[in-house]
Amino acid sequence: MMNNSYWNPDNEDFKISCNGKIYVDKSMLIDYTNSILHTPERFICVSRPRRFGKSTDANMLVAYYSKGCDSKALFDHLKIAHRDSYKKHLNKHHVIYLNMQSFVSNQENIQEMIKFLTSQVILELKTEISDVQFQDETKLRLCLEDIYRYKGEKFVFIIDEWDCIFREFPNDLNSQKVYLDFLRDLLKDKKYVSLAYMTGILPIKKYGTHSALNMFKEISMINPTPMEKFMGFTKEEVKKLCEEYQIDFDEMKAWYDGYHLNKEVSILSPRSVVFSLMDRKFKNYWASTETYESLKVYIDMNFDGLRDDIIKLLARKRVIINPSKFQNDMTTFQSKDDVFTLLVHLGYLGYDEETSEVYIPNNEVVESFVNSIEDSNWGPVSESLRNSMNLIQATYACDGEQVAEYIEKAHLETSILQYNNENALAYTIYLAYIMARNDYTMVREFPSGKGFADVVFIPRYDKPAMIIELKYDQDVDSAIKQIKEKKYFFGLEKYLDNLLLVGINYDKNTKKHTCTIEKFRYEKH
Image (cartoon, rainbow, N blue to C red; front, side, top):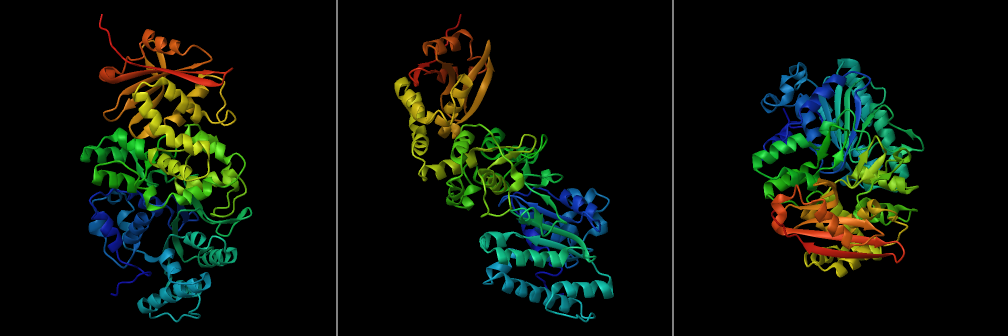
């Protein structure tokens, strides 16, 4: 048997994944796809950010369903092997596998791409199925209908990078429509389709309020149900890996967690987790696969309020959006909601379905925003972010006057982060100390002693811990006094020999910040 690329391909790609030093078993995805075979629900389009395991899952489905290979040895030790449907469908289906990126890369336009794709797949069909006379070898749909009509054969379609056309030809609306019409003609209302599984970064492109492929159930970062556990590595999976590799799980979460898909499931970027385990260090692995210039393009768009909202996001606030009008492409933007919705699909923002709020999920993504803003013409915002490291050093030096000056710059305009109480002041503190995220866990309303400390900086490395007490239109010295009297250092006993007490006040009349800093001295009684 020849090694086909499109018709009943082999399992080599999935075998390579299984042979990796770190492999996380996602085979229960097959249990779901088995449940929808030959049903009206057999069309699913799964979109999620790059490097979140899309192609690995597609290769797994090919290896499992394809008649062109024997994958028993690959799957017998995986979770799916314990399900009743496992043996029934293992290598029992004709599979048509299409990686659209490989076709687009070799052709100058969409029409030529479709023509090339059709000829390549039909060439393999004719080699493997020689007893069927095709009525028209220029149309893939007609050839598949001939096979179904004369042999009763059905097909599992696995289409990877389905949306690359919208990324490669973002402004060519006519070519996009030609492509969508091709897919609709190939798949919609076709009895020969046992399963159609498409995966990419973007959901299915909409024209106005309609979709050319409305038979698909769309699974995305906006609406991941019922596939939340397959959209990335879950916290439970990562915790086991951290235990195995003796890596700090809390540090892993701070860097890569934050995509909360529902109340129970939160996922992490597979690429970032794997590389951090192998390198035994934490840094920006996921975003490094694409220059932050791509993020800069979107955050520099001049939609009313977009810049202010990004500042709020960096200050740990959340922003409500309406994702329903997004046209599922990278060019059709009518409002900042469209930009934020795209950033959710790209992985730069998390999305809370219950509240319709977006947020920056973790340190890795914060770094991408900071890099993009620093290189943009954001004036005092860029300057404030660049000053953040200086602010941290001034705090270590107990230079209250310098700290107040840097926080003043971070405050920016009161129209962005309105000041009316200590809680509002806390957001500015988060923004001002944004570069501390790599060394600290910042906890708001830390329960300690006889109350709650406003902001506590708990070090991950050999840095001083910090208790920050905020005052609004009061005496700054009363902040330090309150920390001591209410014993906010309780719960931080392991840091008592390297602990800073920081009091910050904002005067609403002078619109100035003042700061005082002390090194903690614990007196035993």
